Image 1 (cartoon, rainbow over the protein chains, first blue to last red):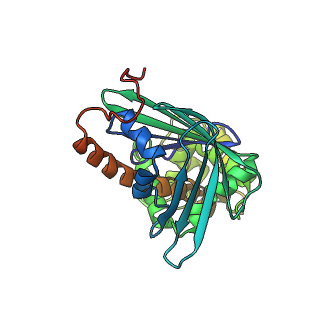
Image 2 (cartoon, rainbow over the protein chains, first blue to last red):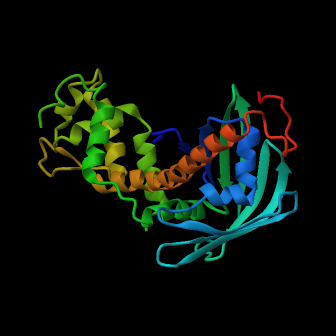
Image 3 (tube, rainbow over the protein chains, first blue to last red):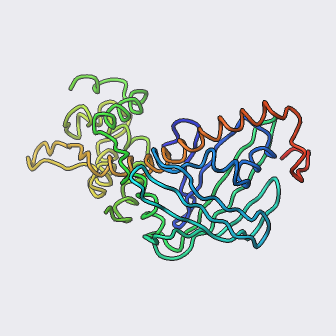
Length: 172
Length: 125
């Protein structure tokens, strides 16, 4: 559903969100980029215009991690948790909780890396306490200003429907 | 804030290719059941069934005219459902593109697999 670009986003169950993304690099490098603070600081910058200001990552099972992002107006957003599983370079399971707990409970994130032909597939599954929580979280980036015009929507629909509608659809 | 039940109804309605094609047709203007049935190899009752699903999910409304009851696309629920996932996807994709650039740099700096990580060289399945 809505898998434009290279990132696939699915909702495998009521409480989960799953993302799949292929990276053109061996998984040892991807795992490093996901678990080493100096590398995380260089890519995990949050919403457009934000940057990762604090990044602590105790890379071992039972270790804690913490991120703080800062927005263009100085607003800070913190998030952290504990690593439940740490299996380099293939698997990472952690709890995650935002400081400004705008949603209830703690989520669990599972990252699985598989490598084939020098490319790495990253699968990130986040499980929330409830469906309401998941839906609330999914809506958040939209509130940051990502909007989808009705025109673009109509274009999308037209493109999708065009192979199925042989006639009759062209004239308004 | 959008209700989960509304989103579920929207996604359930969108799961069917015939219903998506009906919505695509309605994006270019309202149409009667007869007009909608025309491009498909389907009976009018079969189309009517799809229209009922779309109507219940709020994606279309039907006119009052008892004879024709033209169908009209209601853009809002669809736009919300699309934006809902699209916003989330865009957020991650923007970050992942930065990761792509970083990985390119890391590859260039260490043509051999990085020695510092306790990584197995065995390939994934």
